[in-house]
Length: 260
Image (cartoon, rainbow, N blue to C red; front, top):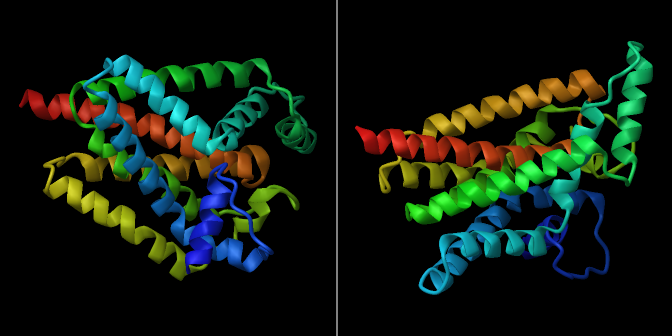
């Protein structure tokens, strides 16, 4: 079990963990720890906020958190976000099969297009502004749920989706997740959802979770229509989109809740 946790940690981060051999079966089974990896990201972000909030402004702390996340995650998710939007902004010829193959080819291209660059800038700006706002209103404990949930949200996509390619990282997981893995992986985010809703009085949090689950379903259908399936890039893009939308919805819900 510990070995599967370390495999998940190695897969989702840039930590230099070495294994003698990782087979496909163990890699698939490690996905039950994906939400826990997100939870640990939240723990370290909260730790950093508590260390620096007496020293720096919320703007500086927000930058520190972004640097920390980039240092831990690397380009794993933002690369998927960039590649996905580059492919989506391909105009197309009107020939379905040709356009499909071209979009998939664009995502494999190592260069970043205009659409990818723009969405990366927007992603960083949104994270900076919204994280700063969370620190300002002293609600940064919600990082625990946000990162845990964003890591979990891709698991239902893996469970119900189909791979767009026959090669790539996405093929290792998509369509190969069992029901028990989906159920076990849901325990931690469900617990955090109940905790923050009841103990922290975030009554609106279940609605946000439902909305994000609906967004992930829409993304799944959209990806399947545009790419005839889901790729690893789409999963990375989903993590990034989920976190940005969560921050927007949570801050909006908090403002509306306090106004009553």
